[in-house]
Image (tube, rainbow, N blue to C red; front, side):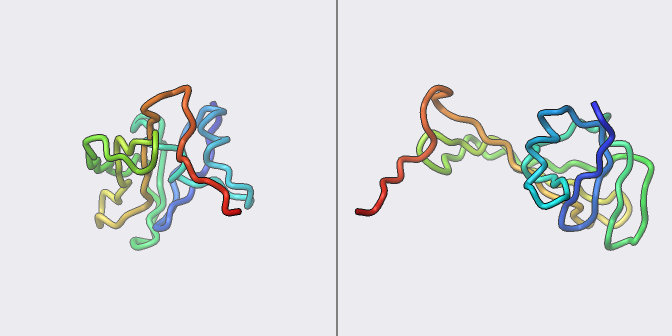
Length: 116
């Protein structure tokens, strides 16, 4: 695990991330992003910065979870959970995340056909 800074639209979180989480967060633009990781465990988040407060806090932000009752977003892809990391002081959103799951782990996601 490594302590890394991951960015959201309203600030950033410094967290202990696994190699797999760091790979998911890297979108190839020189920064790591919260959204692709999914939910980070509270104990793994060491500190966060809120753009609204213009302050850094030595604890984790709040996690607000919205269960989605297995909403199908495409063929073989289910949105299991949607959540937000919010500032403990002002309740501004630091970043958001989504957790997806395949219905059939061996199957393909989506069935788009090329235009001829």
